[in-house]
Length: 537
Image (cartoon, rainbow, N blue to C red; front, side):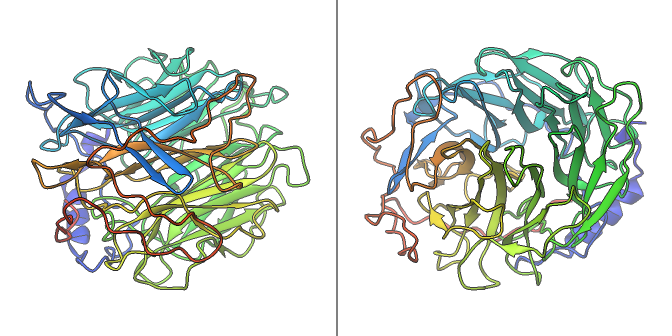
């Protein structure tokens, strides 16, 4: 039964709960299934409103870190008047020069109609190409990309009008995509996520696993499996506790682990299926572990009024070292209802138990500060990378920078936090949906991590505010860009092309392990701070 049959009474109750949000950033009372994060019915942008104006692409440098704009036109220029957010990144493990990013592409911020945008690079992120969208004129959202061990890229995309999803594949580094399943053939639902078993010795090698928010779904169930590269998917089944807003990963023995929570709540679980890898059986879930993440997920916080302050990320170490098959969970949570911290927990016993949560952001505790959109990547050598958006240096507690930390001991200790981007105002460039997405992503390799995030560096003088765009930046423990470890020599981004007149001024101080200096004020007109609206019903 499709989600359109959910009764109107449920949506009325959800809207009433949401209306209790206040402009102070407090979330609505905890609700097991708050309103869907995607909304049907928005028409496409009027003809003639897309790709009419251009400005030079944004290259934003902060110390040794350089962020390159991804959503550019055929000539590499910024598209004025559009919006791009919620990026998901994939990297070819056989050639790190090849990277693809999927995102939510809004042709104009005057409409919430969005499509499945994608971009690719063949030079480690220095230049990007945006050929278009997966399907012109089709309302899509919640992009999730991944790759197998041979370098095939996959793109899971939600059809918003039905809450059904489908899988697309690219065999040329994200330059073009072919739909594997028919429209809606991957079942799916709101805030879906998927992973691929990349272990050649696993019984389920190549299988794709997907889960989503069960109550807002294409049909009954919250989990599905594909044994043929996304072409067909089994009938959905339910997961114990119906976790939502999370991710999943596969251990080197083929066991599948799902990390998620109970919506706006401090309840989190790590859920295992040891037989999902067996194509002869319907998967079952044989282990459910409660995980303390040190707080609650926030929906409707002041930094992202129409969305999440971050979801739950689960990642597994497959390094073959002493930390092999460690399970890691990370989430941006609020311990007290105000502000969020990036919290991390780990399991060293196959998900039977988890450590006490560790706070990764190392600034003084301050409930007015936001450390949000936290995400995680595990390198083949076992290093853990984490990036997030952070308002610690902002007098208004809203303007944010991308921050980075890493761990080389399985998450027991974390390196001093390093700012890797200029500051930006997350409350500008909103489409009608009034958020900058719900997540950012990172993929790690032995020397660093490739990050896709949304920011508002480009200034639009006709609107008097900045625009939401997708950016790529390379982070590493060495404190700056490093060549991607591939057989092909990668150009090292040591020199930044001449910035545009709208480029954000770069601080003179290079990020180090010492406390960050306050960023230099931006050269553009001061952004206008909008009042925080109540999340939409």
